[in-house]
Length: 315
Image (cartoon, one colour):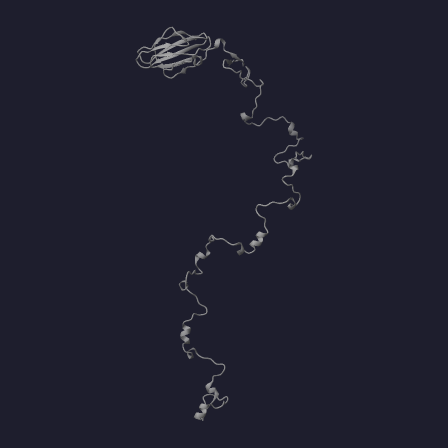
């Protein structure tokens, strides 16, 4: 008996099973063709395994990534960023070491032979020689700024100075009388004659004042000042608040001086005139407040003689 399920393509030898069952099985019934296909369902568990796999082309949400994930449309990816401070080894930069090897140190020196052209070393003795410039000339165009050539006709023209101011420090005065003031013109002050007794006269000369002169002015002294110093003060004013003895230096002979005495309060004080004075007597101030006394003096060069005094006057 022969069992057939497919078209018979050949007959192989009988197996022991066929002998035992007295049957023959065609080869096409037991073995598939060399080229054939199977459905997914023909394989046990294949569909389940495939269901657990991702497609060849697929994507992931940031939450699918372990650690930190940045999506491609994150706006921060386009921000300008300052690199984090770090050090970079020379060996990590392409050709940096080679480039550095071809450079000289910042501080270095050169021998004259290293210089293209002519080089002069700093200790060359010729550098200290005084040198006369080689004879040469320059065109006006060689001069920085404005240049006037020697044959410029304008150099001989009479010119009125441009209005300007001259600093006093730039004026040099000499011991000449040129420009001094005179009766017919203004000008400079004549040179000082020195000393303390001569005065400039209206004719422009220095001369002593006839008969010693009579300087003007009033020196107000502090209350109860004793030294009147009339040789320099000439006229003084003093307020007395107690009995006082006044003294003085004596001016040149012929000088007239005065002392103005003011009272303060209603107590009467006696004023005595001591060294340097030749008075007619003491001065009692009286008991009326704010009274004035004027005592006049005339100098003979040794003493001041009283030339008169006023009665008490209201201040």
